[in-house]
Image: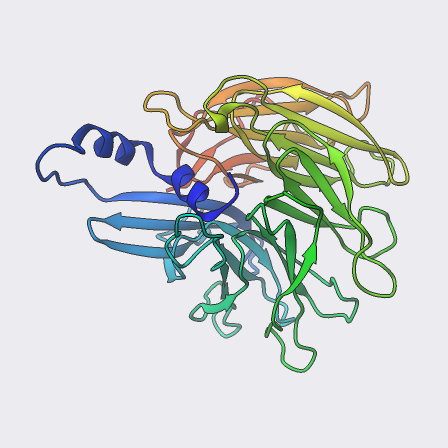
Length: 410
């Protein structure tokens, strides 16, 4: 996957797919309304110390549709209130949280792989961003979305100061393989929150980039870029004089779908993690792994692969058992499946061997979750697992590192 047509097929809800296949040659059939879920995030959006939940979503009802970012407010007494729905461009897929305009309030950036229908034998190039800036007068509420065309297939975005001018910029992973690039949208130095036209940054050849992470990989105080692309993880180091150095490619598993960056082993150097879908995107089985890249020496990574269920899509880093060490959570999903739910794997870090991970449990997720996030959603001090479909939450039980079955967020 990695271009608009592939992305659209991957997001088709399984129940709708079943109806289409079963009824394609018959008479008129009414398909019930259904949701298509994109990325989910958890962050304190209104400054009250409790994390809100935001998710990219599309409600399809016959010939009508509602493309939204849905924001679920955290309630003072616990739980979440009804979501506020913000209209965005067609088929929102990625979502990130950052203070884009420097007003001290987090904003939301939704990535749109394509706003134009794919044309056979033509490269899709109509991606963009729907930017929701927060209304400082009403914490946790957002102004109407602003559309910014990027080109390519905007699969994921990250916000950081990539130009060294003190203003946050936006980097976009282009999912079109023949483009093989990241798109950089610098912020206007004179107009807060306004992005300049995209600049194409080539990253090798033949890579459609599905995910990205912004992190200081080399420890020089400047944010770098880590990209998930086909069978590699690409690292772009920001240079002191501006721009990025030539990419470094780290061999990963088959079909790299997700990346994350964190200091996993506590040595002060940034490590990387990749979720590899394996053979599932090609209709096969097996080969799904999580690759852990430990930066043992500056710029030198040691890779270890850990098997996970077929179709690994996303990986998140957090303390999942309360021991103070970062662990990994992975969501896996195979398309199409009418009976097998997504799978959530917990990989717990060994206290005896920093940077080594052991299986801590594999759980059934919801039917078609393919994004996850980590946060304490019930206020008990333990990290929970948030799934995008619904959205739904897997609450950490009183037994550290053990999670309950998914339930609706509210």
